[in-house]
Length: 292
Ligand code: KIV
Image (cartoon, rainbow, N blue to C red; front, side, top):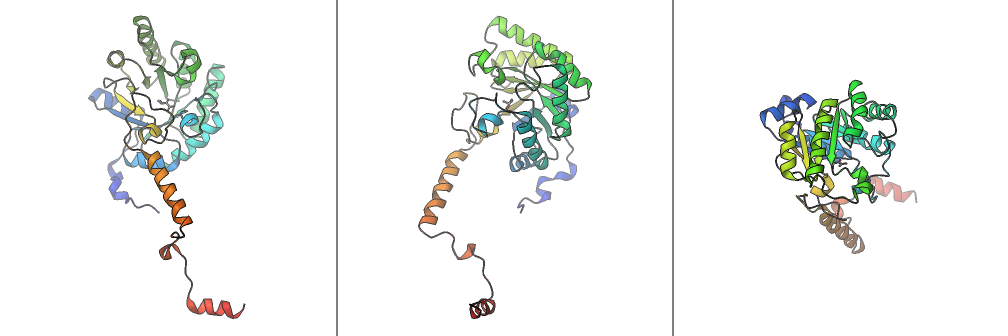
C-alpha cells in the first residue's frame, strides 16, 4: 500500500527520541517539535516528518469525538487511540495525555492510570495538567519509572474553573504563581512542561529558568519547542480557531470538495469508470452464461 519508500525516510541513521534527546536539544538550543495524533495514518506521517514528540492528547474529545470540551474523555478511549498511534510511530517519543479524573482522585489512581498508558497503550511517557496540587502524583509516577510531562497555563480540564478557554498568567500575581508551579514540577521530576496560552515574555522567562524543556502552544517563540493540535493545523476542526493557531492547510474544505465530487459522480453514473472495475476472462463469462 505504501508509496513512500523506506529510503525516503532515511531511517538507517535515525534513533528513537527519548527524554534525554529532548534535554540535549534544549542545551544545544535546537527547537523541539510536537504535534497531537489520535490514529495510525497521522502518526505514520508525523514519524516520517521526523517530529520529536507525538502527543495523544485528550483534545481527542473535541477534535475527533465532537464533545464541547475534553472532560468526557475516558481512560479506555485514550488507550484505544494510543494503540493506533503506537502502531504508526517508531521514532518519536510517544506521550499519552491523562484524561480528566484519571489522576485527580488519589495518588494511587494516578499511578495506576499512568501505568496503563505504558502497559496497554505502549506510550513512552504521560502528560498531566496542573501545578503544586500535582506534585505528589508526579513524584509517585516518576518514582515508578514513568516519565511525566507537566502542563501549565490554560489547562483545558479546568475550563469551568478558569471561566472558559482564556489566556493565563496575565497579571503579576498569576505569572508569579505559574513560575513557582513550573519550578515545583521540575523539582518533582517532570522531564518537560507544556505552557499553553500564556504571555510570550512570561513563557520565555520560565523557559530560561528551567533546565527541562518547555513546549509552547500560544506561548510565543521563547519556549524550547512548539506544539499544535493537529486538527487545527490541518484545518480539520472548524468550530473555532484559537488566535495562536497557524492553519497550514484547509483539509475540511478539501474533504468537502472530495465528498461533493464523489456524490455528484455517483449520481451522474460517471463513477465507477472502466478503470475501477474488476473483469473476468470472456471464456469464463460465456461458460457462466451457458449454465444460466
Ligand atoms: O490535549 C492536547 O492536545 C494538549 C495540547 C494542547 C498540548 O494538551
